[in-house]
Image 1 (cartoon, rainbow, N blue to C red):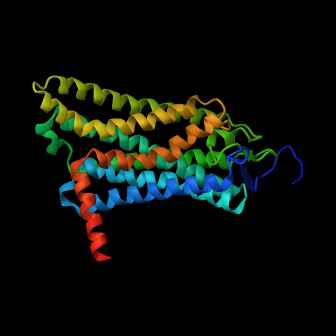
Image 2 (image 1 turned 60 degrees about the vertical axis):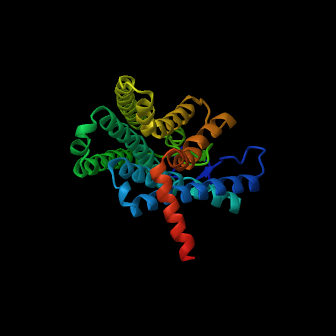
Length: 310
């Protein structure tokens, strides 16, 4: 590669964990295990919901979409990282990097919106139980998911097209295990003002508005639960949204950890990114299934049929 001030990048280097002292075979086994567990857990959730007619309700409809988004989210980063570890290569093509950024933003946005929609679903179920079937009708549920897809796809496409107009310096090394948008922008030689403005505005909106919606929903839910006279009634009402609350806390907690990490290439920043991109999608199926009798019953039925067929 010739040293030039400005050029068209043909590939980027994902430094990832290559500069750390952790043995690469150990990293490969660890991330492969987490990826397989994530795929299996979320696929079982989708299969159980699809096969059990009792779970064809708005809450489980959104949950199956969340499982699909989690599968896609982790699949944008981990397979490429595993391939690079296995081949002892750090490279990713320019087109591959832009594609990875695009899908990372799409499914990361879908996670955010789906968690917000699920909070609204729990708000209606607990605060307006008599009107729940009317309000959360199939048309509205489908529309909420479609709107989530539209916003995520639109923003990701816009940001990806803006990246295509940039020229990059001769330093094409990204100190991360995936193509992170903010890190890639720092390598550009051309003006990135528009990219940064869009990044900060949309990131703020996608963070503040959905989180505000979730906070509002749970404020109303808490108020309604406290008005229930019996402790048993309070427990039953809270148990219907406990799993979602844990997942929201995990998602936003790890996301905040990534945001507050000043140096993503540091060990602390890398761990925060792994928690956000890998661990959270892996834990979601366990959180929902362990605290949900209907889902556990459906999973047992699916697994029982699989063993019987074999």
